[in-house]
Length: 488
Image 1 (cartoon, rainbow, N blue to C red):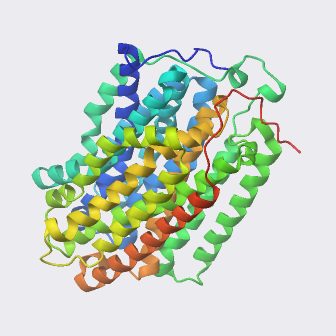
Image 2 (image 1 turned 90 degrees about the horizontal axis):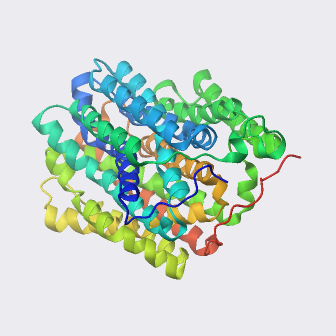
Image 3 (image 1 turned 90 degrees about the vertical axis):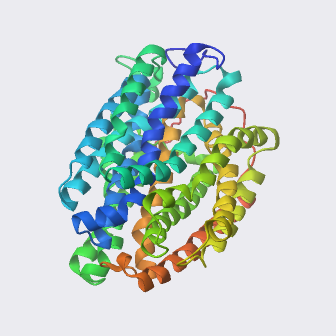
């Protein structure tokens, strides 16, 4: 069902080069999802930011990434996965330069929106390239290695960011993307094969095999996420009963409903064929993704600011505090992926969030004068161990739950679910724990908010564990399958 048959092997230079390009590219996106958190205190002081400004600095990126990552996957399936992947890399690197040059919060937030657009093109492309290009015998290993190494980039972000912030400036956390992007482009041009879904790219195709460019679905998805996010962030400033907040909630709800209606009517021509959700496993795994990544997003948002503004650590030491995450993901993710292949994903996806939740509860009492070895390390290690059990099995199970020809759409939606989880957590948690204005710079107010936020995050993880225990099972053997004709 793809123009180039999956035949790459990990033992061959082309296979390793393709994996390298995918890991480095997705690593840029995942790194920028976390590295900015470490910079928030310095960035806020330099640009005179409020809590809402800091939230939009994070969520401007996550909003566009979550809303349009589906479109990025569909574009790759239709016009060529490598082509759209490279377009995303170039767009992302240009927007990164704009972020580094920002002279105010408005400029920075707009540049982060543009950065998210580039990420929406390259993120699903990095995974769908692996799914479409590798031999079936090596596909699971390649995806497991991608999950682990890309997850390492997420955890490594605070460490790299802390060093750059202390040594140079917060602006260099964006400039560092340029050399990485050059390596990705060179590797992709040299080794990554082009592939596309012939059912959607066939010239002159019609009927079930013909998929149109679903601009309406992409816009409605963006409006749904944007309306809810705006309301959550700006409600403390404007008031819950203001017309702006009520209007944004209404826009978000109506857009979400319209998105579902439009995608159902388009059937297999939709950007997100709703027939995918006939698989209970696919649906459950994506709800699980939202819940777990909401906990991760909320935790990383609060921890970096808290360790610097309350505990008194430097940006570098704050980044070093999460080093166990890097080590555990690097060493453990391939093993977790292999374990999931043998026993199925239910046990790892149930136990992992519980272990991570215990880690968060251990981190709640941390305060001024805290010791890294006795107060921070145990909680971070448990959180990392739990996350390691989740990342690779979750990614592989999502792709295995649908037919191979929907690799781009499935990976795009799962990435959207992950970003949406982090987006909603960063938007909602400050509201839930009463953090507003310049409260992030007030020790007492931030301490109360931090401890409340970690309770919410632990509860989300436990909810994810319960969901996995009840609804997750071993995926069926991957197959091409017919078009999902769900038009009614």
